[in-house]
Length: 282
Image (cartoon, one colour):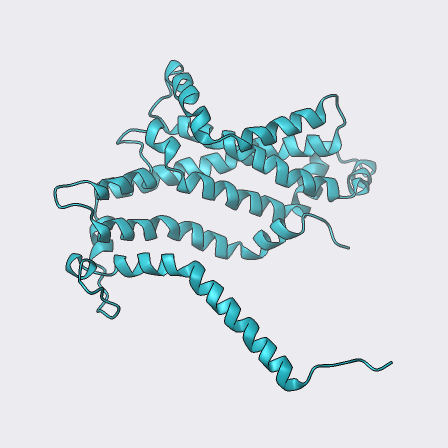
């Protein structure tokens, strides 16, 4: 039976069309980021030039001004501490919880899992005021711990949801073999199950990091000048007698997103595997 095959010219035309479409989509997605990058490399006069400048000599003056601010370094440290703590706490609580949902049948398991997902669906503004009142009563308002707990509240359901699928797809026979060899459930979980779910752990970590690193709402309400994070600090460039400091605002924005981008690229292999598979192939 003859197989109909397109001509080489048609295949080349189709391939070129695909690349053109992909290039157009890539440019559409990257254009806002490139525009912000361009503004961050302009002086104030160049930013407000009319007509807009599309060719100019880039300057790092805005980045130098932002990095020499004492409050920027403090905000960066606060953001790093808060984000890392939220990710670690979410994984330490969420991964064992996901394993319990996947391996232990108990009454109300489906209802409890659904309740966790409902927590993730709630808009943050709906729980902001109750959280602020609770942390004020506990003496935790304007502290880093309050922000960490707030971020964990919304990251935890995401971790449980992602990791439960990985644990369910792992053959239980792997753990049973370890038990026969004398390993405890904890040892089998730590040395056999967790290494096999590494893509899921990386994917959950990056998603939790993005949520904590970029959040403005909780950090704006639950912190003060000493504990504020980078997204809150960026609002300082919107104030002043001279109006919005577009150079400082865009430069600080690029510095804020840079660590997450670098971390995502470094873990790209595991991130793609974690978000696309969620299963053991063999």
